[in-house]
Image: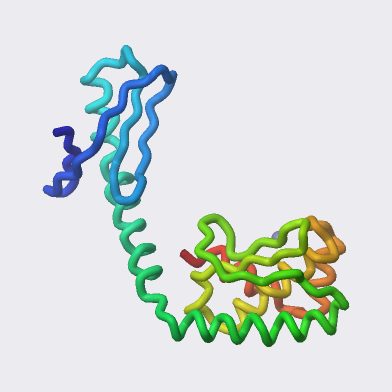
Length: 177
Ligand SMILES: [Zn+2]
């Protein structure tokens, strides 16, 4: 079994040899995977892993924290999120004069919200425990995409019109897990 040592803790990892040029370290579902080129020397791999051990350890801890946050979302949080969405979709449909076809709550990984060209809006489930203001910002953002399918100056101006302090919310969202 391959192991990395960091501060007395042993972290197992899977070594994968493959036709690649560089070494990659991946952390997926708490599992460390080290992908290496076919002809790389074992000593070199060990040294690199040693150097990266702090980073690997911190990544694993970070992933654990994120999982904790997800697990704490309960049915009542989803219901609250759903109500906030309904309220704001109604409000901005009137203000903006556009109506989304469907609004869904999903556990999406890489965005807080999305808007498709079919006018379907998806809101990230992980917003369920956030402030109403933050949720409102995401809804407004996605609703404005029904008018501008881009992040142009006009798009941001439209958001600013309805939420003059949107930049604060945007910044806070960027810093959230
Ligand atoms: Zn956007």
